[in-house]
Amino acid sequence: AQSVSQHNHHVILSEAASLELGCNYSYGGTVNLFWYVQYPGQHLQLLLKYFSGDPLVKGIKGFEAEFIKSKFSFNLRKPSVQWSDTAEYFCAVTPASGGSYIPTFGRGTSLIVHP
Amino acid sequence: DAGVIQSPRHEVTEMGQEVTLRCKPISGHNSLFWYRQTMMRGLELLIYFNNNVPIDDSGMPEDRFSAKMPNASFSTLKIQPSEPRDSAVYFCASSFPRGGWNGYTFGSGTRLTVV
Image (tube, rainbow over all chains, first blue to last red; front, side):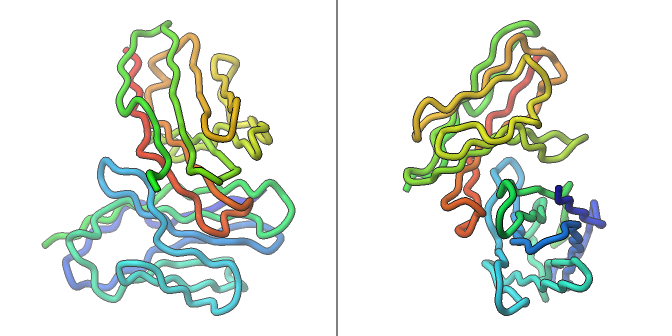
């Protein structure tokens, strides 16, 4: 079974600072990778996803993530955060073929951006 | 597209009572997931349906929990009897096709409080 680890539980930044949230997974085969965002009191929304091809994936709201297969990592980045980016961020992984196709989510990283 | 619809949004009940949570997936989505979110344990998968058939219910905590999907447009999660430790936000998510190629769409969740 796959697992996902998000190292940063809480991140506090000032507006315009750069953001990088770590995500590592463990799984022996090919995976599909996702980042979701959950704004306070809301449901999870898809930020971006990786299935194949260019390992640098661009998502909505200026976010991007890079898949580094050798490191089993899929870190989320944004060059300049805004107050409105305050939210919980979840990394998720799904086996790309076979298996159960069930997404496994990390514990999440809480991001607070000060204006 | 109305998205994944969950009801009720909030539920407060007394310990020992039966609770039924409802979910209407996006039309055409053939995979449906029930997740539970708590501060202590993060997002936990409870059960996964594909084409209305339960594929993996290993995450269902105990016999007090049961889930059904009588047709492609409706699923229920029932807790009987409810206990205070069941207090959490319960999310329903759907996807098509398997593997989440288009991402997983989450409902707004049901916040359950058992007193």
